[in-house]
Structure formats: structure tokens, C-alpha cells
Amino acid sequence: MTGQRETFSDIESLRIAMEKANYVASAGLAMALFCALKLNQPLLLEGEPGVGKTEAAKVFARVLNTDLIRLQCYEGIDLSEAVYEWNYPKQLLAIRIAETEKHHLEEHDLFTEEFLIERPLLKALRHKGEMSSVLLVDEVDRSDDEFEAFLLELLGESTITIPELGTFGSDRPPVVILTSNRTRDLHDALKRRCIYHWISYPDIETTISILRRHVPEASKTLLSQSAATVNRIREINHLQKPPGIAETIDWVRALVLLGVDSIEDQKAPVAWGSLIKYREDLDIVESTLRGTG
Ligand SMILES: Nc1ncnc2c1ncn2[C@@H]1O[C@H](COP(=O)(O)OP(=O)(O)OP(=O)(O)O)[C@@H](O)[C@H]1O
Ligand SMILES: [Mg+2]
Image (cartoon, rainbow, N blue to C red; front, side, top):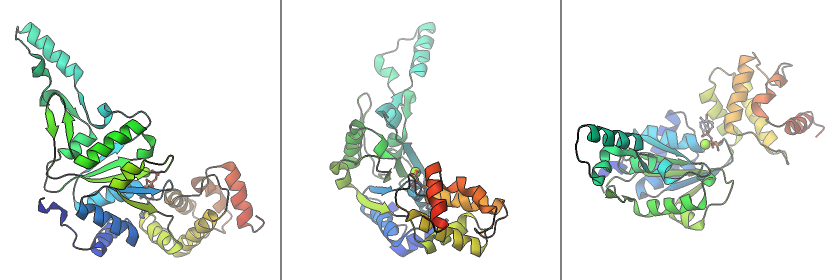
């Protein structure tokens, strides 16, 4: 193995680098990322929507100063979207040109690098550069069992076989980060190969620290009030969608835009739509915060 995985000598320096890049990582997340990097093991990040899973991978690539290669999963995703595809229009064109120029084309002439379209997984495996790339397999829970089984093979062996071209391995395998919102449980076989980390909602102090980075123009009062309010809202049972960090940032941005400096301001309720996304939730939140819930 080459020396490309020696960028950070300890967990704390990785955590600080992430923070400088505007991502507030818990000690647990920093440790999981550090281990994934050093042990060359995939990392599975799970957590509620909007807790910073995707952003963690993006910022991780940034601090490693390497490319982020992202595969967005969805139901029905197949290998032609994820791994590679043959460029049929280009192949057809080559055949036409050969016909007009009276060249003879063999079948194997059409299945060469020239006609290959790399999709994210192949791209990550064949990534050239001093550093391994970071491969983000985002929302893997949306893909189906078949695709998950394929991933398993890729993660286990770090090779991809293209029947017409051969098997591609990598001496610089990507740092793989998978994310899941847990819309379904992933198979144990996949989990077994990964380091697992659950990203929880941040506590009030951490929320303030995140907000300060995203909405620096917000006053201290607004930051601490909004962080405490969101924390309280998340403790309410039976909400359809407790607010994530993304919505919290949007909410504070909206409050600043409205010129609101304290959430007791009369104008503040106008901004609920940035934070709460269900009418029923809004009723519950408002009555709870009024002290009648
Ligand atoms: N710890 C953090 N530090 C700084 N910003 C954060 C942090 N966590 C989340 N954010 C911000 O919150 C927003 C949402 O994060 P992100 O999209 O990564 O969430 P997610 O968990 O991937 O959500 P989803 O499951 O909906 O895809 C982003 O704008 C991100 O910058
Ligand atoms: Mg995401």
C-alpha cells in the first residue's frame, strides 16, 4: 500500500481540519472517519434526514484534498448507472464511418476504452492521483437487494470486471463512505464489512457552533434561543418530522432575513415553514411552546 493514507496523524487533527472546513464533527464521527481512512475500510453513516451524513463525506474529501466521487442511489439503480456503460451512439457512429470508408471493424474494436463510459464506482476504482478518492455511495438504503449484493463484492475485493476489457483493481482504493436514512435495514453482510457510525442530532452547544458557521450574521441571542428551541421540539413525541440540522439552518437564515433578533419577536412565527414541514406538527409545536401541549 502506498503512503497516501497518512495525511492525518491523529483523530484530533482530523476533527480540527473538518471544523476549519465548517463541519463540526463529534469525536465519534472523527474517530470513525479516521479508522476508515487508516484501515481502508468502508464507513457506513446512518442517521435521521438532515443530520449531516452527505456533508460529512464532502468535507472529508475536501480536507483530504482529494476528489469526491458521488453515487446517488435510488430504487432500481443498476450497473449501467453505477459502474459503466458502453457508448452505443458512438459505437454506431464508428460502424457508419467504417462502412463509408470501407474499413473492416471487428466486434472487439467496438469494446475498447474509447467507447467506455465510466460511472462513479469504476471511476473511483480507477482514480488517478496522489490521494485515493472519496467514494460517496449516498442513500444506499434506496437501492434494492441486487445492487447491495453487487456493492458487497466491490467493497470486499476492490475490483470490477468488465467482460470485454478484463478486471480492474486499484492500488489506491477509494475511501468509501456509504450513507443511509434507514428507510430499510441493510443486510448484515454489508454492515459486517463496514465501520458503523450513527450520527445523532447534535446537542445545543454543537448546534450553536454549527449555526454560527452557516449563519454568521445571526446574533448570539438568536443562535442560542433557536438551538434550544429546536432541541426542545425534537423532544416532543409523535412529530412526523423532527427538524434536522438543514432545516434549523434554513430557519435561522429566514429569521435573520425577517430582521428577527429573538424568537419571541412577533414576526418569528412567519418563519415556521423553514423548520416544520407538516401542518399537524406545527399545531403540536406551537401549543407545546406556548406551554399548553
Ligand atoms: N456537523 C455539521 N457541521 C456543519 N454543518 C452541518 C453539520 N451537519 C449538518 N450540516 C449542514 O446541514 C445540512 C444538511 O446536511 P446533509 O445534507 O449532509 O444531511 P444528510 O444527513 O445527508 O440529510 P439527508 O438524509 O436528507 O440526505 C448541510 O447544509 C450541512 O452543511
Ligand atoms: Mg444526504
